Length: 464
Ligand code: AMP
Ligand code: ZN
Image 1 (tube, rainbow, N blue to C red):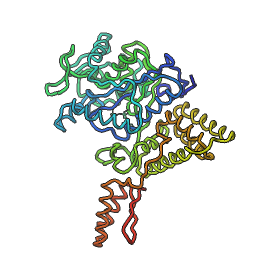
Image 2: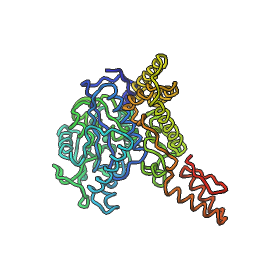
Image 3: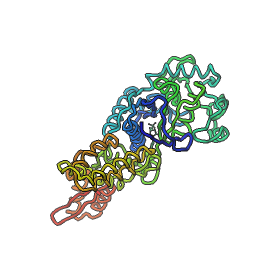
């Protein structure tokens, strides 16, 4: 097997990767909470998961990857209060939580497919694993880590020596950071619920040794990781927001139960920002893949956009940035396709192509440096035209997942209908010399990423 190095959040170091049981790599990725459509930030984290899985496969490993689908227990606040996100969405849409989960899970898998993110070998729904979670909680209670209060079973973080080791905060920091406890029976404000007792109006609830209830969000991942991957596994992934609470709590639960470390390498994807700030519904900047498509972008251009920034760096999403990515991505594919009917390379060019391929592979084996790998791919397509470039790109595509050897779609007719309608409306405003409306509509088009060029005979719409 080839040498790979990955940055381990736990040690804050790049480490040589050595799987427990080569050639299989065991890996767990925190999956989506299926109460809404995945936004582009969520999807950036799954593009990172995919870069990792594709790199491992390319290096000759067999991946045994698990991703959970959270369809119960993720509350509105990261503390242990607020309504269950599934239940809240169900009420708003007048549907059952199962219906909500089915709709948004299907949408999520459609997004993965459109972004060419390979589906993990095992996809596990939280609600299919409740018995394992109850068993986990019971064992934590038996070992003295779990204790009962009126509203649930809590994990006593003071009993677990390593609490805070992932985020590098100590117990005092955790206690100081915890909000004033809603539940005054908690031994420490930062103790967290591993099982919640259900109130009568709670829709999802199961029989347990502690009455009717439902699992805490963190226990889901610990229990499903144990069930599918055993008491030790190679890699755990998620977004950086999971480091201080979700993954810290997962470590506490799993290590308390097993009596030893469970995960060897913790890997986290940095956040995506939009226009330099947080994504939020109130700012109207929470975009989905469908939003990008309706503005005329291809999902794989978004994938290219993500891959062009290292997974450990913040990525600022703007439509200008996506537009440049779309242009670069189309040019890259056009350049690769232009070699399809070319002659074989000269000996000299062959050596250069091989060197590019080697540098691409070395880049991704070095903590998934896909931006560097893409740069090398560009160097390769700039070499004199030859069939070998096309063949090399085709082989490398299992690593990039960018459909590199396919012709870019013709984009001229790709102006979405709603954009065309706004341009028509603007044209009509111009005809009646209503400049204020015309300017407002031009601004609207601009915000959507389109420029309109007026001419004597009409107008032309161009995507920026
Ligand atoms: P959730 O469905 O909220 O559990 O989130 C699914 C995944 O998306 C998790 O791994 C989060 O860490 C990740 N995530 C959430 N927001 C962002 C963001 N803005 N950028 C990157 N990843 C994110
Ligand atoms: Zn998780």
